[in-house]
Figure 1 (cartoon, rainbow, N blue to C red):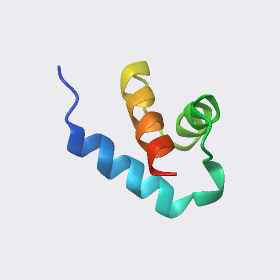
Figure 2: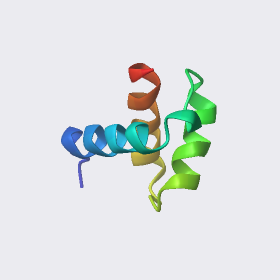
Figure 3: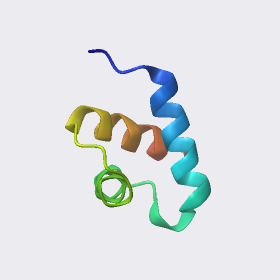
Figure 4: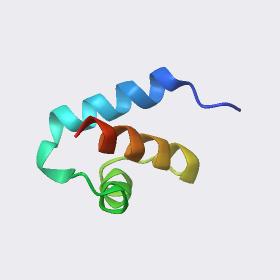
Length: 57
């Protein structure tokens, strides 16, 4: 099942709005933050969201 880019963007934007202090420009730290703050189990989706948040910083 392909991941829709809208899902990644919406989730990343919501996370940045709610928890701006949890994210930095470090991808690895953002992966851990996404894991802690969401219930996303898929590693690929987590990485896409973390990458999106990293680019938005």
